[in-house]
Length: 559
Image (cartoon, rainbow, N blue to C red; front, side, top):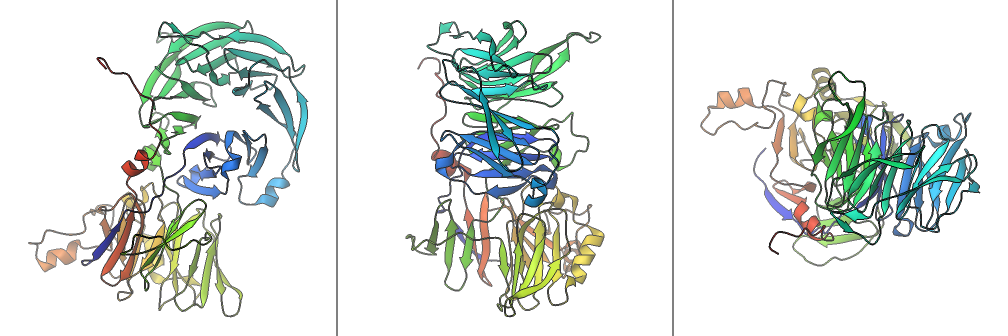
């Protein structure tokens, strides 16, 4: 691997936006995330939680979202309803079968509840329900589609969908820790198949209501601050709530006694993976998902639901995009930082930003300028002949999206990294995979390499060592030496350097192709400036948290 002089850069002032709402769809196994800057992200859980990102704008901040039939519906404070298709092939989505109507309900600031019908070509307003005195802050359909629960200030309304009338108004208790609050905001409601309505509110309570009689059945005081979000599992045997204190609580439906058929809701597991308030939660078949002001998307696996103990069983905390935000001009020693609405150009050794340009796509250009490789949100890669301005070839299709790619100088081999941590090498001149790549796919990568949960975001090459491939994700930098054998599962992947007192024979016997460093993290960018000099751009999480609004203040005894 050798020794390098390293420019350790920490002045990239990138701060991810907070998470406003999330929505999970079981049919597509995708998770949609809206952030406070208006950005919409879709995570493909089947592709190792790879992030597919859509543009947004601060003027279109989304306050609510839902995933249905491979499309996402979003509603914001500006009064707009937006629709985005989450599939890769938009034409297919528009021509799918719509035998049953798709309905959407929207709650408004003026206390009205509006019913919309979703058709393939438009969103059609159907009618208003009875207007309430307070603004509508939360909504939930009954699974049968016959009733809707709506959370407001101080009460919950139950509507009959056919008539549009409110059949029950359930008054919530303003009491909090023995003190009556001025008002109680119902931040979230969930309507279950048996007619139970679960509510979460600003008094720190989770309450269970009988929608048939409009009465309170049970109440749980779980927090000293607002309970802001709720999500129920598809089987309705589990639900999750998030609080303004950064805690996530898990409730499960369990038998009253070991031999009893009667069941009750029990709070089973609290989790503290956030520093600030949890604005939104989701519940997949195997995990609890949460997000909020601290910008982290947290996926907490339910171990009893995970059949195979692989990377799906690991806690995930996603903070940074799955695309690189930094580009480097090696000859001029310039760094280009990409922000949401502008780019900054910095010269190494200088403290002044020198300009802005437009954002870029996921492209790779050969050093001789003859070839251009392009990849979109799908897993396909197309290679174009720049001089002839035509398609040269298409890399064989692969099931997982591309996270990074680069073209090696001299050989014009295209190296591609996918979201499942596989790495391929494709010869552009020969239009086929290289012998090294075929060997890798035959033997397979080390199991610890495949279990990493952050994608490779950048690939480059050593100018004097053509057998070396340099790549990194957010938590490791790796040099792959193609002249050395691949490590097998019995080899120590992260310990490729034997003790210095070992003989040359032992060194050769234990050496393998992967040289990995975890010194620099979170690592947003790393590349060679010259054959002996590296530049590493880090973004410490403590620096991000320091720029966030303060969390809920907790009064301590004696203060």
